[in-house]
Image 1 (cartoon, rainbow, N blue to C red):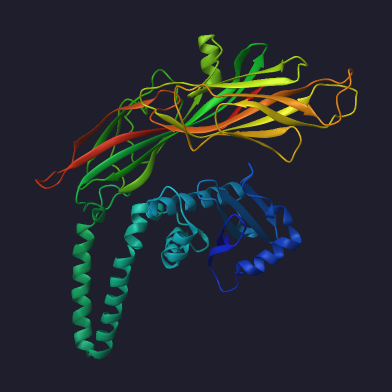
Image 2: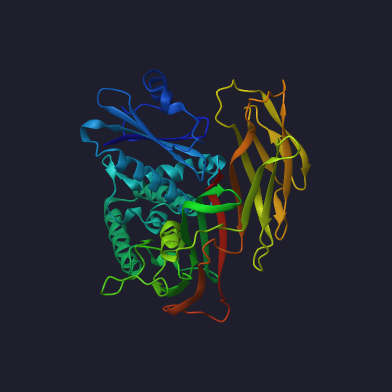
Length: 484
């Protein structure tokens, strides 16, 4: 059973709190308890661990979920007597994070946005929670929430109208009050008929747009580990995680068809939005996705491409994936203490640049019985960006500009500079691991693309109304590592 919810920034400064009862503690009191009983929850949320929980009392447990997208911490306090376990709590906190993104139609929530809309967020939590448990009705649909919690201008009108009606009710005699109530009931009944929806995720109030717009955003994040064997690099393991998000602002009740060309990739059994129609045989075809869309932003599908299975099926080891391929060498120079790292940024028609390119370099001493030798990394030649030594010996970063043109071959050449010299029995310090980070817009890593977007039926386009539609592609690295 949920007792309270809190949202904090990455430094755990309170941004929002929602208390379900008078006995629920404020975040200030909960924070004091966390400091004394479970300080491990205060570790840096920017690390890979973004789910955690701990006991803070005999029957009390606190859960923490870190939103990677919004850089916010979501907390909830639960009663263990009626708790359903960590999975339900973490899933619900993740759902709340996604609902807020959809409600405000944003790619990322700012703290200012949350603070300025404190009242509406409180009402959203009120819609999502019933008697201390998640609301299992259709209120978790964002369009239902938008109907219950209108825009700020509509909300102020609603409050003013309610205050005016209350003032009239106090002043009018009892007979007039009954007549007014009957009139309001009849108007409410007719309004309910008008607003009766065909599907629970779409309401009639969502069908009032000046133009009809439908945009698709395909984002792929790839995670790969490559191994360097002599002069060759081969894939050890990897996968591509893809999401297809939709922004729909269509009038009436349109039936939409999206044709997704998978380019021969096996996307497995994707996670689908409830609006997607499945045929009688229960078979899903990515080349024929039909749905009546919710209004606003929503995730149509989520999939995963297993690169390991593709390698086994084709029998060919992959040498690269994405737009950037990497090669590095150790043992160069007269004293074999130099290294060189080169990138090949492929030139593609649909992609003009890569963004936020950064490489993390890790140097290690080869196995030796001798004592560890002190050294630093010295750069001899660098064609792009800048190199920064870490405060930790043997680590550094090659950081590029905000954008780097495609079709270029950046090179970094450096050496190991020993502080006290190196004896003959000591091994060389070699570049062992390189991690890449970058993104680009214009093409997916797997080659998957939207072949067609069609409106099959249910959309009326007037003389002054236009239809806009299109698809955008973005690829980004997740865990990308090349190692010896």
